[in-house]
Length: 127
Image 1 (spheres, rainbow, N blue to C red):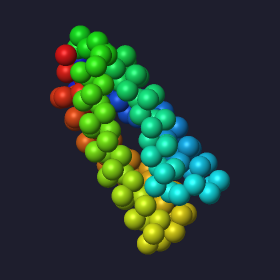
Image 2: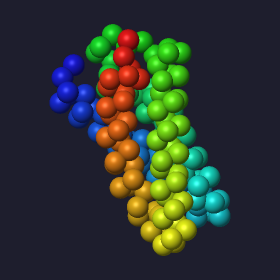
Image 3: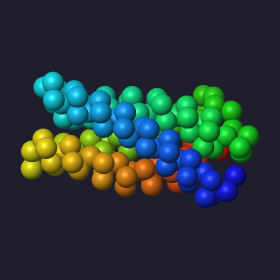
Image 4: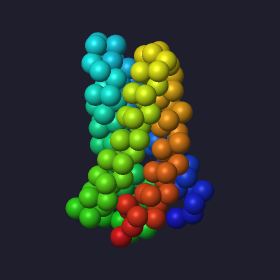
């Protein structure tokens, strides 16, 4: 599948993931959960949706079958990007406050999305 087609599908799936991730993070932090824990909870919910959709839609044409190998690779990538996201959002919360953490989260996730696309295309969803 072409880079353009995969990229556009990844953006759509990523948008859905991000909306779920952000909504969970904001809702939980609004209810009083610490920002770091709320961020991880949001990323878990988005990751579950994204793993499945990217495997079935975005990178499916390459003969990928979702299995233990792809899931392990995805888990490693997700743990690394979640650590980076959580450190960034929690750092912004500590320095500037919760409202700025909510606003900064989309920018943090866009940067990590680029990293995720490259890793997914060349490693996670490789047969």
